[in-house]
Image (cartoon, rainbow, N blue to C red; front, side, top):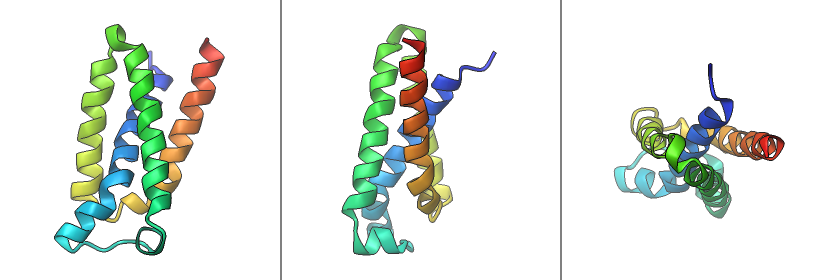
Length: 111
């Protein structure tokens, strides 16, 4: 059985962290950045931070049921998304808030 909330939290952590840190990493390594990262960097940083915090909060509530796995795999996803895909953070502008929103809706529905 697949735990949808687990996967959504993992994506929220991974994509949120990637989105929040991409500008810093891309500037350091000279990687390309999208228009939003260049002209309005506060937007992706805010979106990424909110998604990351929601995923971490969910992982904390499931600390005994795989919460650490969410954090570990989320870190690995962020490293892959940022390090190997590089410009993949642009789609994270849509995927991170979608994962966070679906996580919150599913979380509220399961309470």
